[in-house]
Length: 547
Image 1 (cartoon, rainbow, N blue to C red):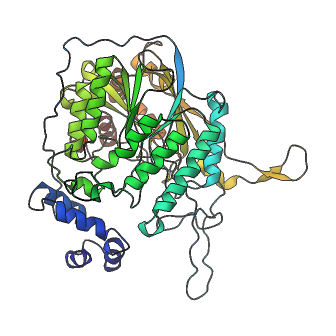
Image 2 (image 1 turned 135 degrees about the horizontal axis):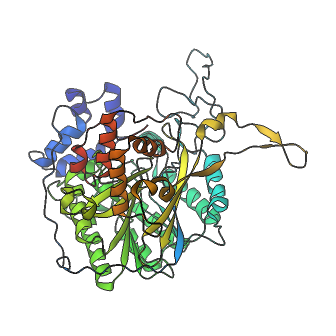
Image 3 (image 1 turned 90 degrees about the vertical axis):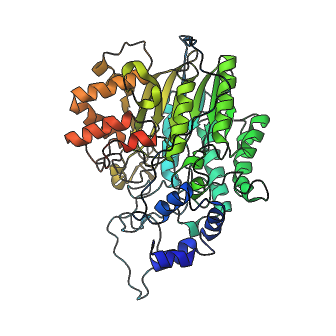
């Protein structure tokens, strides 16, 4: 693989050695190339992955999804109970144990806020921006930022470890953006324990987690169980992590032992009903299995369900439909937006599943990954008729706790009806990372000594109060797909609303990109209506992120 990299020059000479050598991903790529249909669609994806520009990225090849039963002609309309509970949504903490206060925070190489060896000539490099105690725009989260965020949740949301939310969601990425040679299985496991111990102490209640692309090592990599036809242990090479996280979830009493066992044998994905709420089923997915940057996802690319993840999803959704349950789907990688994350065939397959079981079964879908505050609408007919009447369900993308890159730190709280499990209100909270460099010691209350002033987290916006008036939304109506489609229609009439959405996309960061052109506004609206890679690719590219 190193020789192939050298000869085709899809990376620098030193990068070829580092990336594909024995201490890199060479062994994984040997498996991929040995099992891929290199003369077919797999080969096209692999070429595009390794040597961008040499091969055109394949378009979607739709495979019709199979379902146990057709969609009922008469759909049962979910009934609201009138009782609301609180649900917390955290995402993308990316805790960095190597964060070094006083190191270079504005470096030119990835990542910043870490100690680096001094130059060989013995000179001391000048620090342009000293890494603050609580974090910076080009860095992952230090422990102090993680603690500050967790300590703010109770006062801001009216919850506590003793009076927790009904349950919480974590949509992936606990681990820092480490280079491959800086990570290990033990490092991943230790970080998982450290973070979930903090969650247990500060949040309380069950926390339902979907693994992110950084929650493994190498980052992005997850192998389908069927990679070698079950002939060896290659399909179980990442099971160390599934066993570890599932045992922790059982230990914290977040999952029953039977559900934890399901997670341990199925890519850390599972289905569970929260305590006291049997009418809701939460289904988590390991979205790495359809992630464009997971090279194992390039295998058997004509079959989007090669891993069995979507068969699992369909099975659980069908059981929920039969039992009259509502469902929340929780995953890390969004299937749409600008089309830059999910494998095209997988996103198309997922969209078919969503259409089959919405809106009567699937109430909401939750993602992370982008680090930004986003929302996407799924429609009937594979999104070909994007109208208010065809809007089915919303994909909520949770804001990240990490500031990386050029973002503020944030999280969200939902108020949810316990009958329909529709979101009735959503509050997003944030802390301005730009103020962290100014935090300094101040006198303690008793005048004896000094204490460090920490970050201030506060309400950024209420979804209903911000967008409701623009769509004349009734005060007692849910913030569903119809609502969000109405928001996109309002954006077409009022470009100021697009600018406001973009501001919140970066959690009101002073460093986030703005959206002030007609081309950007049209693209943003298009992304919000794109629940699949194919739909997202039809939008004007270049405006998907504010980083």
